[in-house]
Image 1: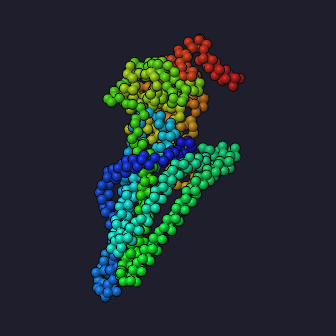
Image 2 (image 1 turned 180 degrees about the vertical axis):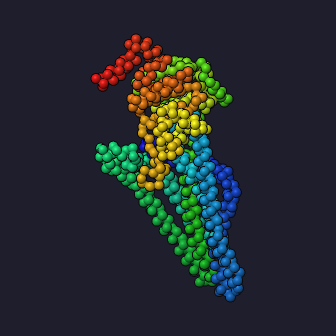
Image 3 (image 1 turned 90 degrees about the vertical axis):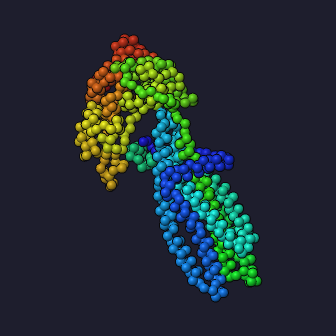
Length: 619
């Protein structure tokens, strides 16, 4: 994975939070999905967790009433036995319930996060093509979906239950205030309205801030990865660019910090204003109560009850608002998860797709046009040719001629904008994509280097293959002896990222570029039953001797099989049965090596240039 792709793991998807109706709809849909996940993930945990949370809401109200009773009985000379028992039971419940709640909460959040992640990537797995994975906007949304899918459901469930707990607590305290004075209850509730409105607006601004500073954070991470990656270490030290990238990284951090500072100042101003309102209400309520107590209209216990109720209502309202805003903000972020999991298919699959059978007649491109988006030029233009079954066909052309694009269409990673691709006369769009791909063994020019063992790196080419099949494929690719000589043979990790517990070499081994290319070739050759072998620059990273060895082995392996070869080194493909020359997405020549040389066209010019280059270098 390159540095640019690594950076998409950080938020950058910018959205405008200026549509309250849309936000409300998103929140409702998200809330329904969240609790659906909670019910599926841990139904046996959700109910006891909810009971534990809500039961704690009665504790502060109970303590306030017990305090009132205790003071009144002390003043009146009544028995305190019942009050003491009440305090003991309440203290025991208050000590035990939080621990139970934390256990249930953590376990439920883990289960929800696992289920949400699995459902998200189950949807991603169903994407037939790769167009979305080449779209930076989708990658950013997928990153946010993964982040919110892992955190949001558990946080929202906890938030909703915390809101329920707060409502129970506030209701209890309001009942206590009503017992003393209904006007006090109204005043305390009225004082909570400004806090609710202010926190609601702050929540929206916090959500907008997160989307706004996303690009700054991603660029900062990009520079940090540059400064710490082994890929960039050589050039950074050679060109002396470390301080340049460090200053740019710091500039991005300063810009993001300035945005956060502005938000903090705004929050500070709001909180100070709300603090003045809260203090004024508290002083007014206590002043009235003390005057009433002096006049004998309320008891000493009532004073204690009211003081506890006013403080309890104000503190609980603040927590209640914070939980509401947190849940609202999380549900807005959860919209990315909903968007991905409800995505329409990127490529249309037939309702009852046909199974791709063994290739018997061949593959035909018939009038194929393709471009990556309406804003891009045509990568392929009216492309028509046939790959006969059992023959080797080579695609030749300069960079950008459309060779790799053609391979992507053949593997049905994209669909043509116009025209059709036929597998034994059947449009590939009518075939089951998985069955089609099982018929194809492919080595892409930008092959993957998995941070797995050597055996796993090859075995991915055909899951379920045994060790003997893996070693045979490695031998055909000319990499068996190298892999067998590793410290743990084929079980040696080909990475130093996940293995090794010290700063030294660790347990893994890093292969050279040419060795990785041979291993990628072995991955494709593992598919012994594949009808079509596609080799996109299979020897570009090899030296001259290794290249000859590989192509000799491939000629033996391809004998009698259908193969599609792509290489800039024309000496490697000159023995193909059919050579097809592409220029700017169009077929300009076709034939075998001898006929194309005799035609003295594009192929002859390219071949002569390469041949002269070798002769000049050896003279």
